[in-house]
Length: 140
Image (tube, rainbow, N blue to C red; front, side, top):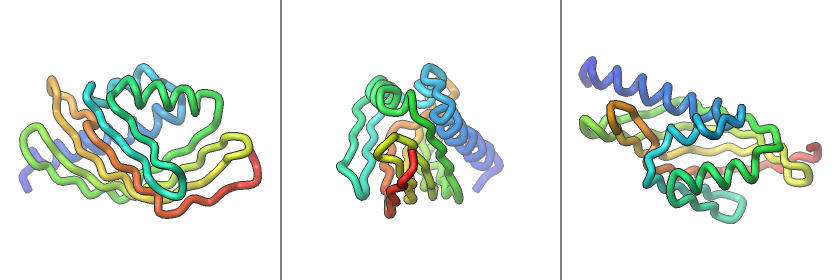
């Protein structure tokens, strides 16, 4: 691993940190900038699969579902590999709290991400969130 790889890995860590923070603070325009236009994502677990086809799709669906509800997302233990000058892959352990009245839950699992560098900026091009546990909570 080179010093340049370490700089790229740090930039990707900051990208993912912004992903969590901007979603939880509902800064949708800034959040959209974190994804490639051709983004693809799928969330799996103890719930029906949720798929996203494109940057506009992930932003609009999350804005619609989460805009009025509190969320807390944490990513831990990043395992990032730079695969070329403009691509990288990463796995993050995750925990989230989603406070939708009547459907509040806390989830645990892993993000499996692919990143692409566009115009000098890392962006998320693909993600698979695999929730391995979802706990329904009785409060809203």
